[in-house]
Image (cartoon, rainbow, N blue to C red; front, side, top):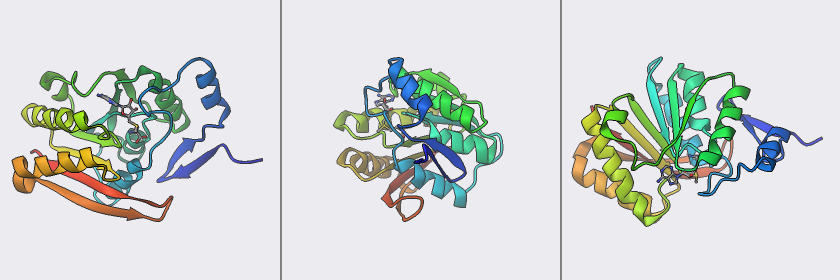
Length: 205
Ligand SMILES: C[S@@+](CC[C@H](N)C(=O)[O-])C[C@H]1O[C@@H](n2cnc3c(N)ncnc32)[C@H](O)[C@@H]1O
């Protein structure tokens, strides 16, 4: 029988054919903004963090979390205290399901990038996001979020993407405004899947 899950970077990822994923879909949890599956750019950040580990217990915010595997990776590998936010509340049960399968606890909240106030961002040390900058208006939303994160005392923001135009625009804008504190790292992975793209890394501390 074909497997209904895979494991990558120590994280168990359920397939869309998995009985519990299918049950959630039947119950009406249907993603509305592309959060219907796990996207590969998360692997780029997992690979980066494997080489640049986070401190234990760091407070991580995963934005546009979808199924939340990137946050789950941080909770498993670094005992990070993780919150995932997404504009689409329908993805949060899939994150909870994956957290359960991976033996970690993660807080999930339905919230947009724009709703993350400076006061709320004070609760976090690191902000992560993968495949979240795909519409033109997202460049501005994410740039403004990074500015608020700086005010809030967040130390680092990492955003990965297969280099769609809005992401490239965001990266260039950050490099203009934050200078040396913003850089882009190119990544090519052959395992666990062929994936390529860039990680925008903004050091705010
Ligand atoms: C392509 S999916 C990526 C999901 C996940 N990060 C991954 O890598 O598997 C984009 C996610 O961003 C969320 N999203 C889109 N616009 C958003 C916004 N303005 N605020 C918060 N989340 C948003 C979507 O609901 C979706 O779950």
